[in-house]
Image (tube, rainbow, N blue to C red; front, top):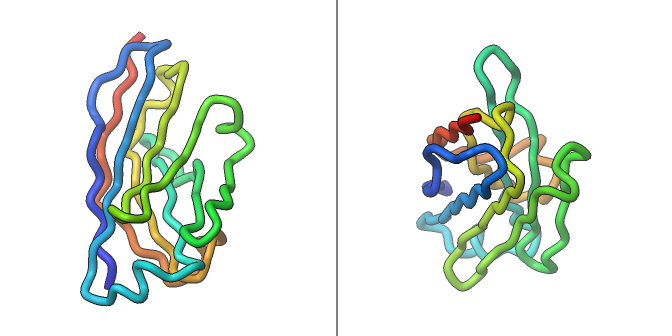
Amino acid sequence: QVQLVESGGGLVQAGGSLRLSCTASGRTLSTLRAYNMAMGWFRQAPGKEREFIAAIRRGDGITRYANSARGRVTISRNNAENTVLLQMNGAKPEDTAVYYCAADSSGLAFSENVYWGQGTQVTVSS
């Protein structure tokens, strides 16, 4: 089992920057430290489906971004602290959503064996 705890949500002014952090923990250290362990971010706006934003793989730092996130979003990791960070610049009101941290022990696909955080609300005011 992997537990994910997000932080950094809240109110952001349009045009400002958003920074979210997620820390993973669990009893099975080998899972947390596996080469293929990927951590990433999704979001879900009211009335919409959850959508992928970005992810990063622990072993080699390979990243994956949604096309809509490229150029505005940066994901990074701190393996020593089992933490992943999401930086979003140029926040827009349409970025308002609940942001979820996710982890997949199988890699960047996030198609199975996915762990989810509780989510953190981000509201971008115009």
